[in-house]
Length: 340
Ligand SMILES: *[C@@H]1O[C@H](CO)[C@@H](O)[C@H](O)[C@H]1NC(C)=O
Ligand SMILES: *[C@@H]1O[C@H](CO)[C@@H](O)[C@H](O)[C@H]1NC(C)=O
Ligand SMILES: *[C@@H]1O[C@H](CO)[C@@H](O)[C@H](O)[C@H]1NC(C)=O
Image 1 (cartoon, protein in one colour):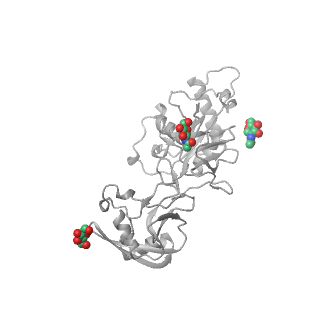
Image 2: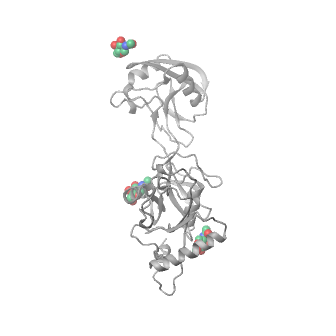
Image 3: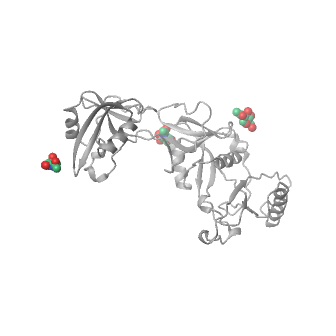
C-alpha cells in the first residue's frame, strides 16, 4: 500500500513554483527486495527515491511519521559494471569492450576492489585502487594501439592521470592479440584501464550528498543496497539487496489545479524560493469530510496565521497538495502497518 503525504506547501517568494526541483515521494509499505522495488517504482512512478539533500531527508522523516523501521532508497553499490578508462567507442570492434581474462574467482567485486590489474601471465584480477602497481599505458593511432609499460608504482588514479598526460590513456585490452603484446614484455603486475564505480543512484543522477549512520556502510552481503532507517533520523545503512523491505519511490508532482497557470520561469526575475512541505494529520472522530473545500480553506487560513505568528512574511503562499486522485486527505490505513 502506498502512502502519499505531501499536503501543504508554503512558498516564500512569488516566482516559479520551481517545479523542476520538485519531486513527489511515495512510501510503499509492501516489502520487496531492491530489484523488485526498483521495478515497481519505475512502473508506477519515476524511480526509487534519490535523497540528495537534507531537505529531502527531512521530508522523508516527516512522511515516515510513526513508521520507525527502514525502507529502501535508490542507492546501491554499482558492483560488476566494469568499464574502460578509454571510452571512445570507435576504438572497439564488436564485443571488444566486453573482452575479459579474469582469473578464477575474479572479479571478487569486494567493495574496495574497483580497479583491475593485469598479471604478466595475462590473467586479470580486481584490486584495491590505492595500491601502487606498475602501469600499462597505450598510444592509440587509428585502430592500432602501442602499449607502454611503466615499471614504477602508482595508484590507479595516478596511473590514469599519468597515462592521459603522456600517452592516450590507461590501456584497454580488447582481444587476445592485445593481451599477448602486453604479456610479451610484462614482468610483474600492472594497472590496466578497467574499473567500476561505487555508490550509484538508481535514476542515474549524481550527488555528493551522503547521510550514512555511524559505522556505515559496513558492506553486509555482496550486492549492497541502501535503506534509510527511520528509527535513526532517516540515516542510511547498507544491506543485502535480496532482503524484502518497504521502499520509497519518487515521481513528478501532479499539476495543482489551484495554482494554475504557473508563471513562466524565464520571465520572472530570479527570487530565492524556498519551499516547505508540511505533513498534517487530522484526527477525525466526528467524521467531518476533510476534503470539503470550505473545511480546507478554513484550515489554510488558520495555518497562515500560525506561520505569520512564527515570523514568516506576507510573501508566503500556502496551498494544499493534491494527490493524483484529486483528494488532499487520505485515511491512514492502520491495518497495513500492523501487517508489517
Ligand atoms: C517502533 O514503534 C513501535 C510502535 O509505535 C514501538 O512499539 C517500537 O518499540 C518502536 N521501535 C523502535 C526501534 O523504536
Ligand atoms: C595497424 O595494424 C594493422 C593490422 O595489425 C597493420 O596492418 C597496420 O600496418 C598497422 N598500422 C600502423 C599505423 O601501425
Ligand atoms: C527479488 O525477488 C524476486 C521475486 O521474488 C526474485 O525473483 C529475485 O531473485 C529477488 N532478487 C534478489 C536479489 O534476491
